[in-house]
Amino acid sequence: MVSTSIDRPDVFHDIAGTEIDVVERPLTAWQRIYDNGAVRKTVLLVVLALIWEVYARALGNPLLFPTFTDTLAALLSAIVSLELPEAAAYTLSLLIKGYLAGLAIAGVLTAFASVSRIGADLLQTLTAMFNPLPSIALLPLALIWFGLGDASVIFVLIHAVLWAVALNTFSGFRALSPTLKMVGRNYGLSSTGYIVWILIPGAFPSILTGLKVGWAFAWRTLIAAELVFGVSSGSGGLGWYVFENKNQLLIPEVFAGLLTVILFGLFVENIVFKTIEAKTVQRWGMAS
Amino acid sequence: MYSRRVSSDRQCASPHHCDSAQLTSSVNATSATEPLLSVRGVTLRYHTKDHLITATYRVSFDVLESDRFVLLGPSGCGKSTLLKAVGGYMQPVEGEMLLNGARIAEPGPDRAFVFQEFDQLLPWKTVRDNICFALTASGKLQRRDAVDRAMHYIDKVGLTKFAANFPHTLSGGMKQRVAIARAMASEPDILLMDEPFAALDALTRERMQAELLQLWEETRFTVLFVTHSIPEAIRIGNRILLLSAHPGQAKAEINCPGIDEVDAEGKPLSDRIQEMLFDRIVQQGEPENG
Image (cartoon, rainbow over all chains, first blue to last red; front, side, top):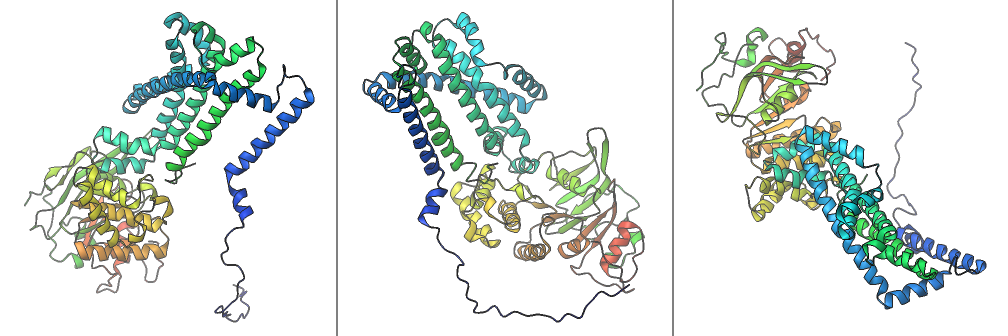
């Protein structure tokens, strides 16, 4: 073997007393502001509102595209007259009923699926069949079955929520690490305890995804159902508010209604679900 | 006392100096005390997608109170499967396993498991609550007593400062310490450890082994410890069961002095273990692959 070793001396460094200019330094105020996601997004919203205002003024046709300030004024007066809050409350009460009912059924289906193989097959088959079916497509049928009224809307809402939540929860249960499952069984928990204390928190990242997807489906379905069929159900939800004002060519009011729909969406997505996420999966280091 | 099924069993007066032929059929010489855990003629099989696999074949051993009993063997010898069966996660197709004379039927808090994986702590609970939950879930303790006991064991593994931390903020070694504290806190009849240090770096592993022995000195728990590392088996165990590869059969059950003792012929214990495991003579100075 050819020796490749060159005669290299040992080297020692004396690092005591070295001057290092920055070891740790707080960030500047600007850096901290820019790091805040809420601030960045608010700035973006302001810019979008500005663009809207500028474009609408340039267009000068309030019947087609009202300005941001007109929309805001319509929104404020609708809020003051309680017309919009009442419509929103009605829509929200329907949403909550449908959402909770969907969650309950999803819970039952998932529980069945996680204890038996045939239950799992049933869940997967049903999900594969019904998940691609837009909920709104079921509304005509629902109107025939349940008549004009809340029951039909709640029926389609359940359909919107159920499959997304059930599928995500079940796949979350499945994906839970085998080690954690064995740990859970080692604790000597009852089977309900095992589901409540181990499976559900362990699958929470997936469950949360299901809840978010289910919420988005439900919200869209509900507004669409009110827009199209609100007349017949004779009620005054947000979609109905938009529809009615369009008929009277009160376009700023239409925009105000749509803005409310958007604001609700933003609120639930960015405040409600963000908070749940921060308090759970992020705190636990489980966020993917 | 219990009756022995195998008539060819020979008592080995001093297991230290038994030759390997004798060792293969020798049983625990200190059978005067009732065994805590008794595994008799256990065959374990499991299904993969298209095979039925025999993991262990007619393995027998007894673990006594305060034993540090090591299951040692190459990968694929079914030692982890055996441990899982003792944990109650699977049932033997042949033979029986008795804990304090009662047949092991399902997992339970009387056998606390420490796994190799770092994800064995519940991510949604702090270090303290992970341990508390182990105590309250089985209805063993009230919340207040559970907190006290949890803090006692957290202190024992030197993690008091991290009691309020969530597991994902800890290093691998610290997670394993919490898992050990959790297992010890439930004060089980026997601790089952499935290569708990295998995923750690060498330096941390050394320290954890020393800490485990220190804890044993303090509380004298009984532990059944699975490893594939000969040096670790010698360091941890006071008795070592050697298992052959695929399917696992008991090759020998030997006492261990805790150090790699050199026998009268000048052969270190690790070399003798290696010879017994792999049926070949180890030359002096041959590098170890434990």
